[in-house]
Image 1 (cartoon, rainbow, N blue to C red):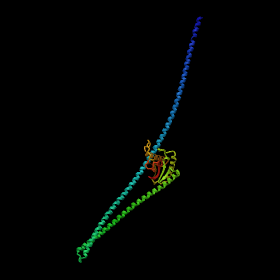
Image 2 (cartoon, one colour; image 1 turned 90 degrees about the vertical axis):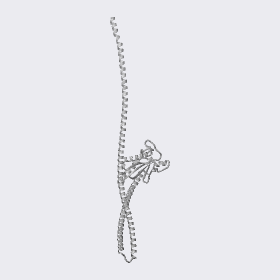
Image 3 (tube, rainbow, N blue to C red; image 1 turned 45 degrees about the vertical axis):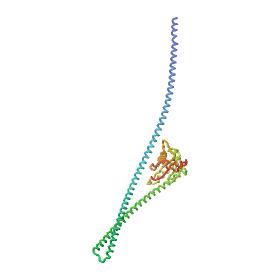
Image 4 (spheres, one colour; image 1 turned 180 degrees about the vertical axis):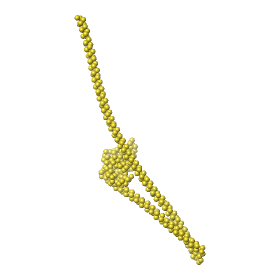
Length: 369
């Protein structure tokens, strides 16, 4: 009986340890689950942050791709403009070479005519000298003949020898007179030929002058029409003037100080200029070789920046900016020319701010090429 009790007690002593171990194991499992849950939450948070960073990088990459596309379009446009300018330059050079060739041909013709005139003049001088010599010889022979006749008239009997000399002198006198007449005819013919050449050259000069005057007058008519249209569309403003054959615009209307970028206010004015110029282009006959000059001018105060080391670069860049805008507006590039004169053609030589403002200008001139 006692042995059963003691055995039962020994059997009952195992359960608390087993329960404690099981409890400890459960706590460890709960702890591991908690650690796993916390780790899972931290990992989810980290992955969420990476997703946000990846989305931001994707957005930045798309923006960079857009900027790159814009740069490529700008580069393509610049290459297109460069090609147009190169084509315009090639055309201008071809026209210049053709004009030089025509001028050379005309100069050769003039040189040939001058050589012919010089030769004719030399022939005339030689004929005049020969005429003078013959006249002197005839006068001498006439004097001799008169002396002989005077001597013979005093004699009552004329010898055969004296008569032969008189006949010989008469024949020589007739031959000399005939030769003198031939020389006079040749001289008259040479004078007439020279006069014809002079008249022909004078007629050619007059015809050329008339043609040039007609071209200038015709272009002057279109220039007046063009300036009249510009005055209508731009209005009567004090800062826009017409002086002679030039249309003068203050630089402040088109550009900011020390800049070659067209202002927003300048674009509507240039659009009106392009519209008038397109209408005029359709009206001017094709045989009139005209060009619209855009001249940039600055005041005499120096500028030294990385983009504009001097006023030369600034004035040229402003003129080129206007030319490019007009080309983009549909004006043929071969009809436009950009020039920069810096501060070396002032309208006012004073040192006041008003004088400087007057000299800062853009001049537009419709003229022959």
